[in-house]
Image (cartoon, rainbow, N blue to C red; front, side):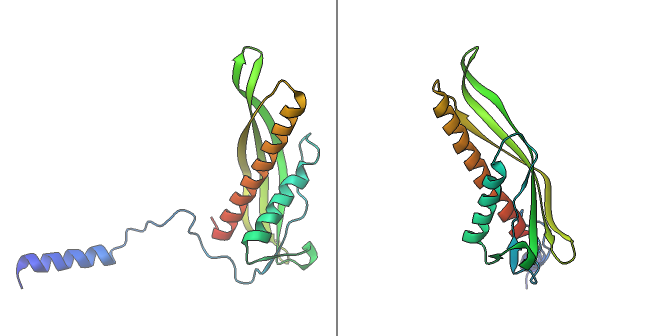
Length: 172
């Protein structure tokens, strides 16, 4: 066998067997096989915005109901419990038509979410500062601006729920 061929084989083996250690982001440890059920009690609302706890709780429940092999059950029957706290909700003007005429507003929400094993209290997953923003259009008609804000809040809830679900299921 020629020296070139031996070197080529050695290089091929090195490249095949000598893994670099990189892996896909979010490809964490598998979910604990003992977890078959989850509970999502109503999040705590620490903001001045009434009712958003139901919006964010409902979005996370819906995410598990539609995408997960885990069953959503009452807290007393769950293997794991999601505990959520809506820590902050604020808006900021993003775009203006004139100095005092806002046309685009950014709604930003920060949540503290964790999932604990119900029996032991062991934290299975957590993100103490999950932040997401959604922009919405302002309108001279106050009712239209309010509807746009509510729609942005719904979108923010769905997106944060999707992120929580994906990160929990991948253990990332």
